[in-house]
Amino acid sequence: MRRVMEKDLILNRNVILINGAIFAACLSFFAIWEADLPPRVYAGFSAFMVAFLPAVMVTREDKFKAMILGCSLPVERKTIVRARFVLSVGMALVGVLGAFLLGAFLPSSSFRAGDLFAWGPLMTGLAGITLVLSLLLPFTLRYGMKGILIFLVSAQILGAILLVIMQVTQSSADKVLMGKILGALAWIHSLVGHTAFNALLVIFLLATLGVSYLVSVRVFERREL
Amino acid sequence: MEPILEVRGVRKAYQGFLLKDVSFSLPRGYIMGLIGPNGAGKTTLLKMILDLVRPDAGEIRVFGMDANREGEAVRARVAFVHEEPSFYGALPAERVADIFRVFYPTWDVETFRGLAKEFGVPLGKKLKTLSQGMRTRFALCAALAHEAELFLLDEPSSGLDPAFRRDLLDRLSGVIEGGQTSVLFSTHITSDLDRVADYITFLRDGCLQFTLTREEVSERYALVKGDPGILTEEVRALFAGVVVGEFGFVALTDDVRATREALEGESVVVDRATLEDVVFYTGRKGKGGMRFRGESA
Image (cartoon, rainbow over all chains, first blue to last red; front, side, top):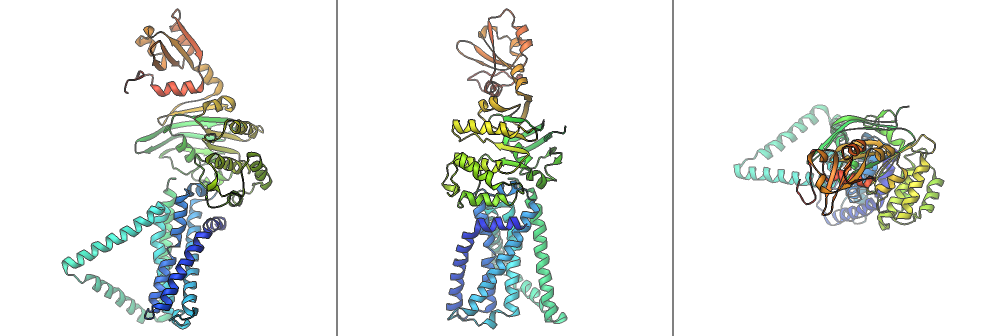
């Protein structure tokens, strides 16, 4: 797996660095000029951005049709998927950590270190990374760049359909549903306590990532190149 | 001795294409040429051996191992050159070679550098700046730099100049000299096969037409030229393909003896058929469905 990760890192080093610089510039803007931005939103936004880094690798793979090369090497498809997951999660964690450090220590930043390096923003960042990667990776591994487009377009279409349904039916089901989810989370939180709740959240996120990995292996093993 | 490659009843269906029950085997120490018109299924077959494409039915065994279930172990002993070598063009050739190196324990840096020098590949240049032919040369250097036992080459000689093509064929002949290594390569340039191939496998429209030694092909096939006036239904049935022109017909037979006997006394010429003739005339029509130049199928 290490060999595959090294390969991906070498092949994508420059674009990762360039995208990292763009993300840093963007996050610096939010940290300095968006004074009212809550730390959790900053954490969620930075997680969302860095979780899309694997997309960068996929665009390169598609551009140079390099997946066929990777799969012709003596390595199992499962290993390629595992390497992609480890690398993506690793890059996203480093990216979120970098975003937090940037927000906390950038001169003129509206955040203090304590605002960001707290349970709330940390868990938000972790949840953002996990959920985006869990949804995105199976699509990209199966369909390449097209997968990202399918993912984004499907999400937008689904959102638009739901919005229209809400408007037409004058329903508040979305608010009711969100309220129920948040209520359930608050109930679990009060039941098990703060530490156990966070532990449960981490377990849930890891399980989600695990399911996504298994799905990715299955779809990637069937992919024909 | 167990063949190095065994393809048994392989079938693959795509929309508008069907590779039908292809079976053949390649012994150790031989070169097999895979020929056929575009869309015959040559690339699909090579990809299936590398487990890039999964067969719908049938089995492919390489070194006695299942190409699908034991793909990693198989690919460790296989060298490949794809039809359009796909590399990360933004990197210098040497950097891409470094990536290959870590995947092959038998990779020999000196051999690779020596080949690159010999093949004229500028290792310091980014691959996207190299021509298609030069990228193929680079792919060949990489394929030859580790001790592979099976070489799978998809149209390796297209895009190469004739002098280099000849060098490549000599090198492939050298590769099998030890008797342990085999080469399977697809090509449109059938004259290359006349020079080096021990076996010929001919695919057309997804169907295996034959898999024979080069000598068997020479013995079995011949061109028959004569006056169209003798082309009775009975005579036509002797041919695997026939093209009728203004001044006569040219036909391909796959049973020279029967054809000679049947046409004894007729004014015909029976000539040796080259591989190109075999591909050309078989590609024109089938035995059961006569078709003449200018007629639709």
